[in-house]
Amino acid sequence: MSPTPAPAPETPEAPGSAGPAGPDAEHTAELARTRAFFAVRAAGWDAKFPEDGPRFAAAIATLGLRPGDRVLDAGCGTGRALPLLRAAVGPDGRVIGADVTPEMLRVADARHHGTAALLTADCARLPLADASLDAVFAAGLISHLSDLDGALRELARVTRPGAALALFQPIGRAALAARHGRELTPDDRRAEPHLRPLLTATGWRLDSYTDTDDQFLARATRVNL
Image 1 (cartoon, rainbow, N blue to C red):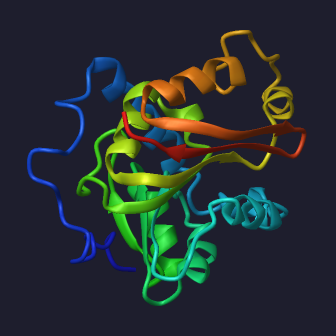
Image 2: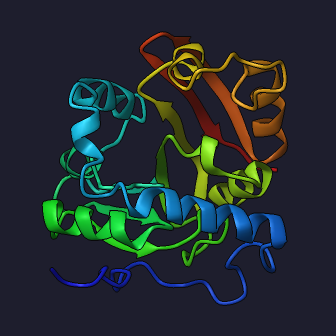
Image 3: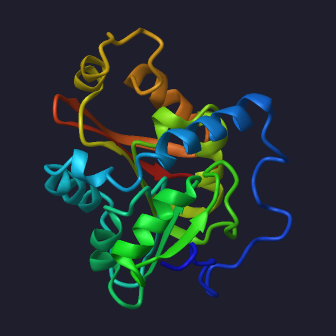
């Protein structure tokens, strides 16, 4: 199995615009915890969620992708969304998968080789040019971000005005909390009263918000700050 591929040639790094100046100690520690958690679970991750495919497809459909579009799967993990994104943008489109855990990306490469350019990258510091994307799909990403504000600003930086963002989880907030043996708290960052103003402040307009037992989906549009 080959190492995680480098960025595709048509996805240039933007000199001087790679996001925040540098992660703080909390952010660095959070990245390390995320890598450690997923590294040992990468090989069997998809087998834990065999029923999620249709939910992923429905969430991706809300992006309104067209042939030739450029889309990022932020926190792509083992790449479950990559074939669906490739089908939506066609052979002339560009699909990029970014994740901080190399082991997850190796699984993605083995299962979906050639489907996307894979980047070992922090979604709060992406090696992508300003306004270079038409859409971002992010499944399960919010729960693993210590700096949600910074990550949303970074996703806004790399997308053009009018670009689409889907923050997705194939299970609702309450159901996920119950699965983990806890209850939702008022400060949950995914709650609409918290998420809407945060999106507004970071360059996004929340268009729709769904939180049912079998899905969490916040669909937003990139606006000019």
